[in-house]
Image: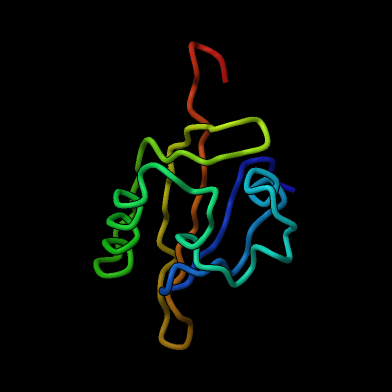
Length: 111
């Protein structure tokens, strides 16, 4: 129900949950997104290294992160997004997860 593009990743960067806003940006059906490695998605272009470093730090050190300049090829053309990652706290019987939020960047003063 959230209109913000959101996803939950596992420790191998696979999408566990993705909302319809994210699957819409990616141009894929929601059921086709689940279980995929986020870095294997062809629509993700610029900033992969930066995003990978943020995810690695989140998993290894339990640190939240925010990265800029991720570019995604959407149905509206190439769009820039900031990516915010929040570590979902580990418990003994629950594996580590990362909540990702994509935040569309302003283009020429317009969102």
